[in-house]
Length: 379
Ligand code: ADP
Ligand code: GN1
Ligand code: MG
Image (cartoon, rainbow, N blue to C red; front, top):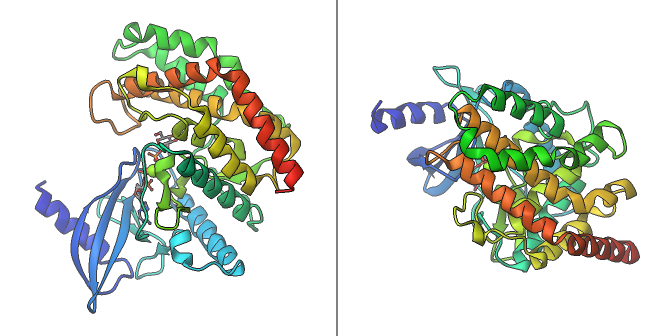
């Protein structure tokens, strides 16, 4: 299909959302690995407004209706909390779902695909790497605030949009399966990575085992807090809005801390090929955790605080495992831009874990200091 006719089809879908005025431009947007994201610009009686449109990836989310049911509840709750706190600019601090003209929060296309629309949050940016402690701190604060705002979401338990998403033992079973099937004969070239992951099987399960055994409480968390899912308002120096809500569901806040640590504490991108550039930066970690803990320590309990220093390593490991599983299986899950992309991503994760391990004592001491400071300040 030509790109002109694809755009024509896309405009037909956009017309079915409750948006008024004339669409002037639509183009692909962002660098997410999962959904197809587009930004559109509209002329609404002379005002220019933008929207974000996404086709939900049905290979990944088997029940897009449940994904949207969660998102509608979560965004409405966030908006109510912001109003109650007297926050200005509420529609920039939480996503706003724009429903279909018929009232549903989605539009189905001619192939059965599921589409959704959000207000475009202007004057905000996302980054692939944090680079400065100030930015690390505001990212931590944004996620801590997000979790705190959702702590009192009422009603039934949110749907598990991807069952077992952060269950390390289940992820290892999927890895074992991919390894023994080895459909493309890729195991031979990844022996070192396989050996690393097999050697770390036990330790990596610390968070998901603690959750399953009830040693830490189940809470609503985001589950995908890599830094390019957090919009930053540079002018105000603030982590403005946590986006990408598909995986907001029950879990442990430690998963979110872990994904922040994974993506914020290294100056290298997730797919960096020069592994000498991949290292854990204690200064970025300290700033990140400080920002997070100030917002989250009022609700975190001792058993969660005790596992805090393990969170980054565990989530980095689950990502190494997932990237390698996908590489062995023939790249069926993550969007890739080059043949060994998933392998490159796995290698950066392992390099980051090795760097964390070399600084384990410092990570534990820094975490302990921040937790103690929050306790003494009552923050
Ligand atoms: P994926 O699930 O594929 O990662 P995301 O929901 O993260 O998709 O969206 C992709 C990117 O689009 C995000 O990283 C963010 O930069 C941008 N984005 C998403 N929603 C909005 C919004 N409402 N306003 C502005 N930018 C957005
Ligand atoms: C995916 O959707 P995106 O690109 O923000 C993935 C996360 C991974 C991340 C790795 C639903 O996030 O779990 O941590 O890639 N999301 C899903 O970059 O699998
Ligand atoms: Mg994303």
